[in-house]
Length: 35
Image (tube, rainbow, N blue to C red; front, side, top):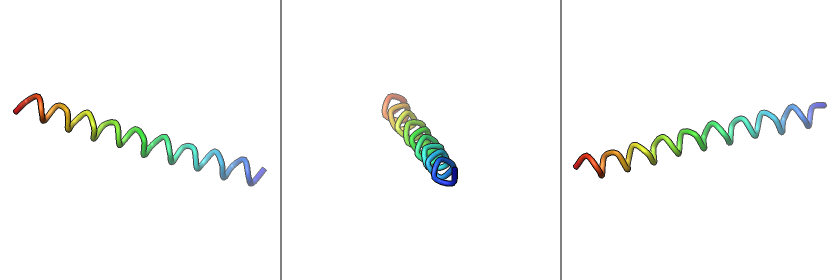
């Protein structure tokens, strides 16, 4: 049970950081197009 909880928390952390990376990437593209 503890292992499953740990894995679930780890996947949540990875998906959150991945979302943040995508947002940053999109912002960079936006900045390039606006210039």
